[in-house]
Length: 146
Image (cartoon, rainbow, N blue to C red; front, side, top):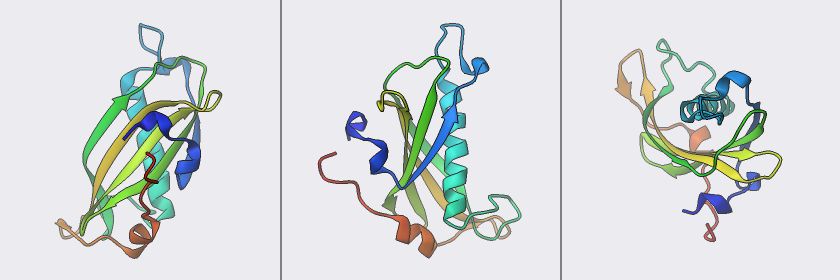
């Protein structure tokens, strides 16, 4: 998939985040680990729109991050404003993938892209559970041009 062809219109959920001075590293660009924080903040808000208001250990229906793959596409510096998109791109029986892309709000260009595999999980029983209808209903494949 060529993430550089994506735009914010390809996503069901968008969150705006402003970079902070402390997000830069010694090379004066946004540190690679900082983007993971941006992704996490956006992903948690997106999941709350799907019924996961309490992503906590005491929940009987929650998710757990199983894997992630990150592609760094462009450098970015402070100050910047980002639009971060999330959408479900794969469904399994007990797991699903979220594609998330960080776009520079000024240029619209993709800066960083990530695929996050989440497993639906019952923390009380410590077992995986089937994905819920809200997740199933939020799934739609990306257009074939991508």
